[in-house]
Length: 486
Image (cartoon, rainbow, N blue to C red):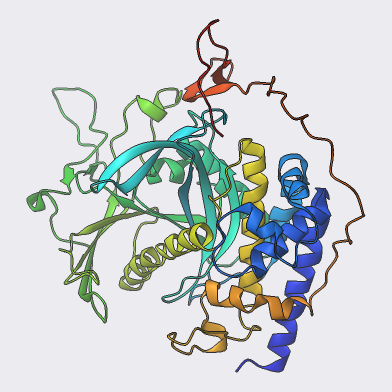
């Protein structure tokens, strides 16, 4: 059981966050706050927004619900500062460990929704990778220690069509770190913040863009990459010519190019068997003036780091374990650093549990919203709801199903904490005002067709001015108009 002082402090922190959340809702705040309350107190997974309007905590009609999402306003800057000032989980050595990843909100049938991009999805159909239209969101969260499904969500940014993911992520991470420093989460003399990334990110470029921050980067690399060794010392050649800028090749798929590792560790684990980690110091990619480095005016940099190869005996799902290649932005790693880094990389997958929870339980991608700004407001309500669950996870009573195993008060999953949130809600501040009596509007007269046809939006197309490409949904005279959804 938790100590009474700890419970009192956690309750005060949750109450303060609820008051701050209400202050961040600057337009139609009462409706948005009650929508977040219904999101936390409704029974079972969220399927539709109309179901939330029927919850007892939502005292307004479903028209006010859609009005709050479509015409409300959220002070995102203040909400981000509030999230950065909350108690955050830390690693065993006291440092902050962040993770960044992109999760899509798929909208394949929303032909009238603007700013949609082609999102890469996994395992669709017959285990195929497909590109499906939707709104991709870049999420940054703080990771905890050990096997858990909890993360502390800190930021969410919707990626525009044609956006440079590395550039957007660099700006997003920079702002998150600056807010953490301003909130006192990191002070001079503390250990550097660790940012963990999965494959798909240009971790070397991100390291170059964020080199002025107290930040270390750890990312996974493809198994077909080729690195270069440190620049050899300059030796006078009587034949002349330019001295070499890069050393010999380090090919991931050719062990004869590796040489002896600088550090090698062997760890016995319960889930993966024997884990062998080997590191190779001061390796860098050979950059060329193409893609992201095409507009780089100065000389191309040499971004050195440590390459880590992790090999385990088995996987929990019984699949064939393949080596995992990691790149760390630091050099001169010790055995303790190597073990710390690959353990931190395994914790990155806790963010996948958070994505599954907010999609399947909280219903993040369930609403069929047309306006992307409304989708952003709903996303921040989801972030606020998940944060409240994290703050009160040691205060609620476990209302487990008969087939569920008992769990300790501080070891409940987010879904089980949500099940008992309604009993705790009455003790928390309820700043939302009661609804005023009113009557429904006239609406569209019966028999009158819709004369304001929505514009059909093309997917992933951007004009030279930076605006999304669109085309009006008019049709030739005498032809049947095409039905659009969204």
